[in-house]
Image (cartoon, rainbow, N blue to C red; front, side, top):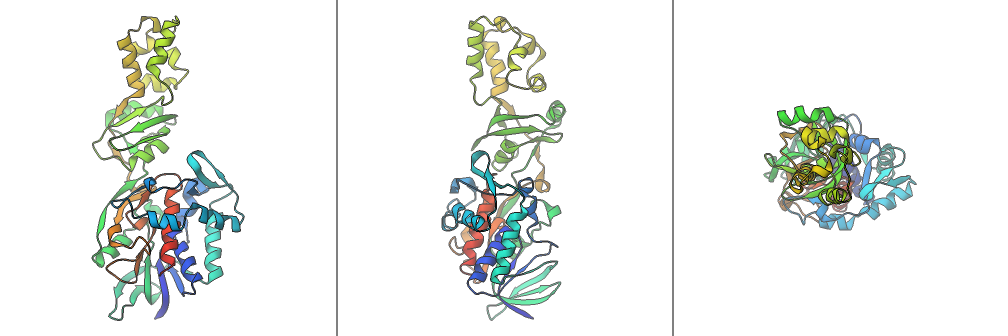
Amino acid sequence: MKIEDVIIIGAGASGLMCAIEAAKRGRKVRVLDHANKAGKKILMSGGGRCNFTNYSVEADNYISHNPHFCKSALKRFNQWDFLALIAQYQIPYHERLHGQLFCNDSAKDILDMLLNECHRYGAEIQLNCSITQVKKLDSGQFQLETSQGAFQTSSLVIATGGLSIPKMGATAFGYQLAEQFAIKVWPTRAGLVPLTLQPDDKERFTPLTGIAVPCQITNQSRSFTENLLFTHRGLSGPAILQISSYWQPGEALIINLLPDLDLLETLKQKRQQGHKAKIQTLLADYLPKRLLQALLSEAQLNMTLADCSDKQLLSISDNLQSWTIKPNGSEGYRTAEVTLGGVDCDAVSSKTMESLQVSGLYFVGEVLDVSGWLGGYNFQWAWASGWSAGQYA
């Protein structure tokens, strides 16, 4: 029987951050993970460059049944705190759109930094270790049975993540463990995920595979202005990933393919100026020809501007600026970047991440019912929640 002060299940972003902070306090820390490598999701994130945080982080960038829960941790360990750690390791990075921060070289820089910090403070990482049983003893200690022997600890941190990208080793372990201790778990679903199309729409839009255009995409609760990408399975790109976390099955999406233009007014002005070109010629300045052919009728495309009535121009503008489409579903956890839902935040202290009903049991990162937007927000939640638990575990 190995006895530790703190056992963390999960060697991902939140688990490693928690390990560093707990070890800094002189705690004897061991991280257990069933994978053969720590931080696999870190390495694959951001196309291998790791979008590790964002210059602007607010509670509004997160989805949770308790929208206030994330505020405390995000305030106590913010993006500037993580950037200070990056600076210590002299990791070069750059900003992309909307304040997103990426490594210049490789996501491996971030993982190496975390592993170095673990080593520096004496936190042990044990890989290829599957957990078969967890129970709480009368003494208050947790006992873990694993493929590598039995462990006991007074502080058990669950950093097992969500269900997204199962090929990377994602499992429901964290949710099952919460339920074992009678802690509520909100139903889960895929977030930040490409959407699939109804059969007729799929046939209509599959020829557009590979086309990417800026757009504004709106549903009943949110609106995002980002790029839209047509794929052979449906719709993807940042705009779709963002709205997917708010989209409900059966709901239509309204897409404006020219978000920076009042198309109706522009066409009317050109008509007034005496333009005689065909609609398809005029619109080719703004959108790819194949996209226009998919959204407008042949009759509309071949009309000359001079012959168009206001009503016809309104119809053309609406087709491109209020394109309404009802997705068939999402691609699911296979390609989702996050899992919505999870361990109920009302059952956890927002300051310490400790369960309010099971002393010594902590939950950090994506296993909790906190999901960030695309853009570095999920990593910042991992750092912040892991750091917070590490002050107390």
